[in-house]
Length: 417
Image 1 (cartoon, rainbow, N blue to C red):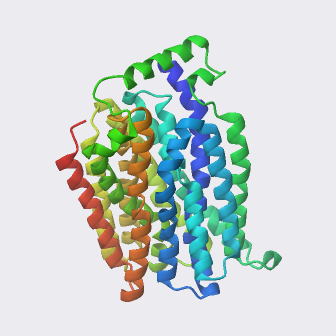
Image 2 (cartoon, rainbow, N blue to C red):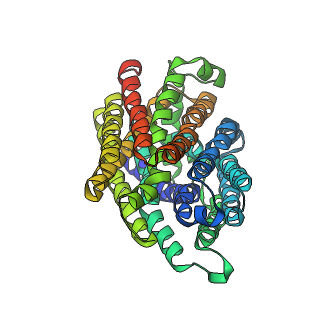
């Protein structure tokens, strides 16, 4: 079976990573556009923070329905629809002129992208058994880090080279050029992704049957919730949602504010900011893969996640303390990214251990949607605190407290797994 699962991973994971890289870049490129966009449109830091975060309100409202629909109509149609629509919304951001328009398009981007991440997490449960999911989730979630590693330099290059071309500002070209690949990728989803092992023509009949039977046996095991109603009643689902809220606050912070943090410590030039912003994400990629593999080998989930969030909390505190020292601040920001990103693949192995069927579809989406409300709260609060205090430090300390809370919840309330 090892050869079969390796074959599946090589076929699915690179394409899913590619899709999420596009989604992530289209979601967070506003952080780079901000470097010039706010001045051109006369937006305040608070307006930016609200606009960056309101994405997650749309995400929250439509994520569970999207994942329940995926369970009914299949992954191919759902992921294709999501990818094409978010590409169109991202391109439309180039023509924002008012705060209301900014808020509206960021909200729609959240609506359109809703369901993609939990949809992929659910989709992977159709292919891989529980004992393999942390490393598989880790491989897929390297897309966070890969997007950060390549998104920054690409954004910096576009911003530095496209100013005034075709009478558009550099930030307008950023939205347009980074939205086009998503439209193309949405069409490719329909041609490339099989629904389930039984539909994979690149597997032999024996391989299809072996994978399907293993997953059926696992999903019918006692102790798993199978209906969405059961998932709603489970305290473990709500604890996971609270933990994920804390995790996402850190992820949103480094995604939306890393360029501003790097600029604040004295780095000049859009291209230089873009290149340097890749460093924390590269380190986070390595940590993410290592933590997922080590968690699968040991069979332990809770402490692998809790230690990572504790590292994230420490890194964010140190970043706030070291903003006056460029080298120390970058080291601290990299430490924060390592902790934040390392927590994600292990975390998603926890709810998958007690959810199956419709409960998995709805429960995973519910956890993700509630958790991603932090993507609204964290950028907005950091923007508001920076507007009122003139410094990013207080916002970083607030997010550090949430990361520490995640460690606390994991250690005290999550079962040993």
